Length: 208
Ligand SMILES: [Zn+2]
Image (tube, rainbow, N blue to C red; front, side):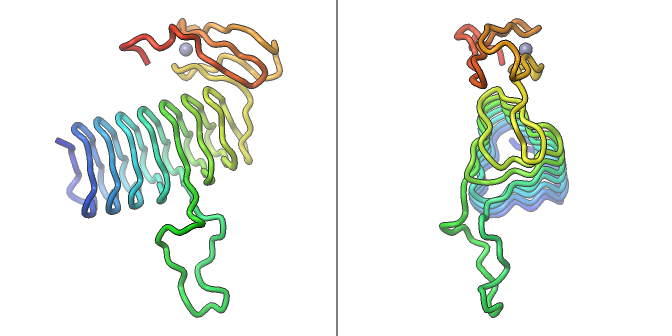
């Protein structure tokens, strides 16, 4: 059974998996799906039809808009905001009508792949993917896709190195153009330019 704080608002048609905790004043809109053993921190907002995998950690005051998909094992730190509208206007051009907040053809998707981490206070653009096990530094503005295992920081965010599944930075881009790198934790990767690939034996069952 999930554990839901009595002040949380869970709309109709929401699915929440076993072992997931939803803390105070969280609002989860209709049709959203949240997997097992997740944590949704206080005062976070999850829009309609958002899909969230298993063992995802969402800190306090995180805003997740429609058209966002979050895979297993992702961490989203406090006060991070997702966006999905390339043409954000409140009204029609004559100011006479509020524009609908329902998703339309300008609502662009964002995908956060498994194991990725988004630091505190980030803003995440749309029509992009944050790759597997990538890490976004605190306070970053993400405007384009971030490849697997990249550490990206800044405003706009740019990739400065490679991170291990364990979170350790293992390589600074610009040094040693192609090499095999072993993290302190024992996992191994090849880095060729900005392409980071993990070696097959990193995917042992029961690890990661
Ligand atoms: Zn490691």
